[in-house]
Every structure is written in structure tokens, then in C-alpha cells.
Image: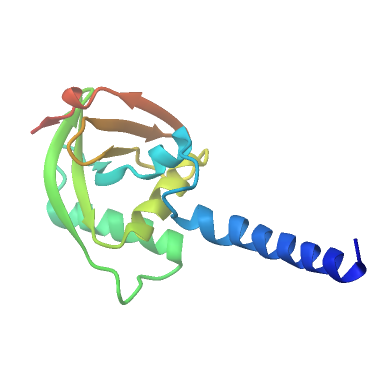
Amino acid sequence: MTTKIIRRLIVGAIVLQFLWFMILPAGNRLAPRSPEMAQARLRPIGHQLPSPADETEEQFRAAVSELIVSIYHRMPDWLEFRVGRRFEFDGRYFREFICAAGSVCGHIHLRAQQAGGISRAIIERAGLPGSEQTCWQVRSGVETKFDCEDLRAA
């Protein structure tokens, strides 16, 4: 083999490596599907944060705003959220936190996973379209999966 052919093979290998590592895993349907990738496709349905039975919607909104400020160090101008329904789980009441910005829910989840991360527990529901929902409670950095049937509207 000549050096010209060897150089072309090396350049070709580098190009293929670039395409494989940078483009294919980003969403190409030919990329191998692992259980972790299937899990990542779960569609978030909602977050619930504890809310004592006597807590008003304004008090809950203030507590969530305080949590968001502790994460972002200010209340972002673009952030809008609303308070949803009340749920009961394991003898405690939770309220839905509804926010279109998924990054906010992600930041809250990451903070809740840390020991001493947030003072309230969170409940998350997720599911693939047309399939069963999966529920988790994150309390004091510990994530526990539970049956979504145990989460009842209050």
C-alpha cells in the first residue's frame, strides 16, 4: 500500500468516528436502543410537591418561588408556572407544580436527589404515550418508585 492510500484510510476512519460519536447517538433511529435510552424517552406528566392540608395556593406558590430562587439565584423573567390539583399519597398531601419549561423540573429533580437538597419531597409521574405511568418519590436524596394507583386526587 502506498502512503497516499494509508492517509485516505486514516482520514476516512476519522470521519466515520466523528459521524458515529457525534451524529448517530443524537437521535438517529439506527443507533442501538439501551434500557437507559428507553427510560430517557419517558414523557414527564407532572411534579407534585408536599403541601399541608391547610396551605393556601398563595403559600404554596411562595414556597415554590423560594425553591426556584434557591436554584437559579433569582426568579427568571421567562419562568411561568401554575399550581395544579391536590393529591394525597402515604397520608401526606401534595400539589401539582405545572411548568412548561422542562429544565426547571429537571433542576428541581437534581436538587431533590441531593441529601439535604430541598426541604420538601417531590413526586414525579412519567410515562410513554399509550402506556402505564411510572411514579417516584424523592425525599431527602432517596428516590423510591411506587405504584401510581397509590397517588389519589384529594
